[in-house]
Image (cartoon, rainbow, N blue to C red):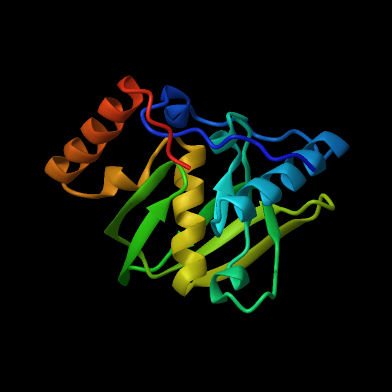
Length: 175
């Protein structure tokens, strides 16, 4: 495993659409391992490969770590997609490792049905609700070049983007 740098807004690579993973290889498994290490170090609960400048459709997630009890439940999702969603919406305060120290309330479908491939190459479907639904939608957005600030008001988004552009010009690194 290797710790990888998480790219930060306004890095244009965050807007790239990630390419599908053709097959689960040892390289993909190693990338997932690197992503888990980087995600835990940040610390975060979800990470899309594009956030470490790898434009492939791979997400790592560990929602159990959020509880802070030392437990862990690492999960990887290859080529994840939302195949159904509820009409009922949920509002959750989101943050992002690529937009550090900024949080905003985002409205998304309360439940979603997802399809993905696991690290063993098995195609699976499952229902997600609560934090899992929010997190998987957030990370799938990353794979499509969408950031959570794209779901907030234009004024708030413009302020956040401007703040990070100014910081980047001054050479300020968020860690």
